[in-house]
Each structure stands twice: as C-alpha cells, then as structure tokens.
Image 1 (cartoon, rainbow, N blue to C red):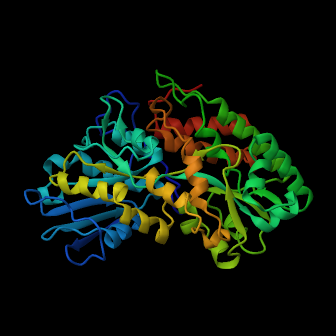
Image 2 (cartoon, rainbow, N blue to C red):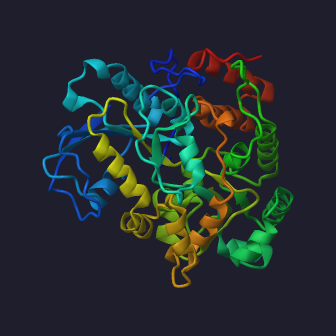
Image 3 (cartoon, helix red, strand yellow):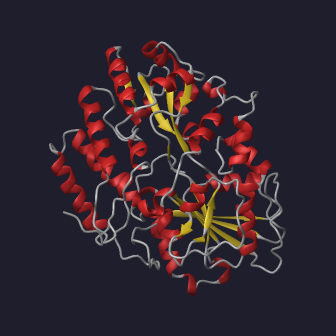
Length: 451
C-alpha cells in the first residue's frame, strides 16, 4: 500500500537477484522489533503445525501498517518469536536494504534469515520473478481477485510466490457540496452517469472552473487510470523504452488541465493538495482506493466528515496493494503460508480489516457480502456503501504480466515527476522533460535503451 510519501528513487545497480526471463533492475535507516508469542492482541488463526520449523520468524516491510494488523488479528504459535525489520520506502531505501539482505542469505544465520517480506505493485514483479522468492505449496481460494494472484506469479515458470491481503480498486472521491453546485446532484449513481467517460469528465472540469472550483487535486490524480489501462508496456521485448499511447494521453490531459486551471499544479503528496481536503477546499475530485481514506485524507475526515462520496469514474483502475511474499530462505514455510491464508481467506480477520481499518480485501466473496448488505455504510461517505462501488470496480481490474516490468516504479513516479516539472514551466518544453527522464534512466536503469 502506498501510504504517505512514496517518492522512491530506484537505485541504479546491476540486479543482485536472479531475474532470468524478466526484465531486470531496481532496488529496496530502518528498525528491528521483536514480538514474542503470547503478547499479541486477539486473533483468529492459530499458525498451523509449525513444530518442526524455525523458532524465529523474520518479516521485512517498509512501515508498521501490516505489523499492526498482524499483532491485532493473528495469534503467533507458542515458542515463536517474530522479528520485524522495517526500512522506509523513501528514496528506495527499503528495496536497497532488502536486496542487500537477500544477496547475503546464504551466509546468514538461520534465525536471521528472511521468512517473508512485503512488496508493492510497482515492484512486485522484480521479486516474484526472482529466485529470492519460493512457490507457495497451497492453492489459494478461488474467491481471491485473480489480478492480485497474477501480480505475484513468476512468469518464468507460472509459480505463485505470494498473495496480497488487499485489493485496491481506486475510485473518484468527490466532495458532495461541490458536486451539487456544479452538477445539480450529489447522488453517487447520478454523478457516475455524468463522469463515466473522459469527455464528460473534461466537460465537468470546465463547468467546475466556471463556478470557481478545481476539478482535481493534482496533475497525477488521473495518471493511474491511464497507465493501469495501457495496451502496451513501457518496454519492448528488447528492453527498449516505448511510451504507451495512454501515457501520452495523460500528459496531454494534464497539461490542458494545468493551462486551464482545472487542477492544482503539484504532485500527489503535496501539502497544497492535502490542504484542499479541508472544509474550505475548492477541489471537487480526488482519486484513491479504500486505504487512501484512512491514511491520506485526515484533513477531510477531521473537518468535512459526511461531505464526501465515491463513484467509479471514467475508468476502472487500481492503485497499490501490499503483497506478502514467501522468501526462498524461509525455514518457517508452514507458518508463512498460514499467515497468508489468514489475511486472505479468514472471514473474521478480513472483516476486522475492513470494518476497523478500511482495508478492502483481495477476497471477492467476503467483500461482496458487505457490498450486498443494505445496513452497511461508511460514515465518512455520509452512509454510502463504498464496498459496493469498489466490488463493482474490482471486477474489471486485470493484470497482464506482459505489460508490467520491474521498472514500473520509475514509470509511475520518476517519469510523472519529470512531466510535472514541465507542467510548472521548469523546463519550458516537453522535449526537455523527456531529456531529463532519459538521464534518470541512464542512472537508475542503464539496461534500458532509449532515444
């Protein structure tokens, strides 16, 4: 899950992981924390039969979100100590540290070897398609959204290496009061009918501007709508940069929005954008999944509770996700896989994650129970059943391994960052922005050829 600032600048180095069959490269201060069995909060799974396995479970992650969920909802078997290694995602530190540790696993003591580590969508392929991860020995439930499994599948041999406890359908999160003024309605179904194509969305942006509002919170709001629905990869089979038409369409739209004052000219995590979520904000639409409410819209929750709603918008897409990957060095295979099952198939765990933490699960069947529950509603959304909207959106999310690369983080963050500089006029031309990006590629991903 991409929470707070995910500004990872991916380290330029020759991949230390075995990546045969996959395009290669990219990489992941920190802290360690030990949790001993018996100290955890209420839980619903018992860890399976791990009596013949290691007594220390080592989990690597980039923040404490999953750690908090684990300690709240999972019971560690007696005699097992859980050791957490947490390194920030900022500036690629997590991947850098993780890659170094993976490289040294053969000479690491058994109680220090990585058993499970977490990965995000933008670099999941790097690790799934490597010898750093091991295939799962069980078959996940057929209720799990298939795209989350596809993302963790090693395309070299079609082996599943992990699971994501989240699905992350991303929606248009709109301010009801502004929608009512601009569109004459704040009803989610009616708003959706007025925003269900890009032509309509652009027309409403002009109407919003005429009334003194701003359509989107930043130039990157609509980015993943386009890139998640691209028909081609950023890389050719020969590792040559090729720009999908959808990305170029986003650049054209974003520049138009900047020139016409339809958006804030800032990045996704800018304070300028967050300030617009307050009760006096003028921005009509933000884009994000369920975790975005909980971790990134605190200003909106504090100051404008109830003045928000969600709809699918012009295009189904997803943003983020947190994958649990089975390390090839684990001596706790049974326990690791039991944790995976608990967070993807245990209804009690999944229900608590949704009700208490707004984490939309990868488990379609359980989320559809909420979607079909007429008594369920989100207070932040004035009682709207957001599970129903997300479940509908998630049905149409796909993951085509041929379109994803282990360089995705560069294409989703570094490249848009260079375009943002152009939108701000520094540099003055799009050609200069592309030239700057090519320099980034030379530094961070020298295996990629480009103009």
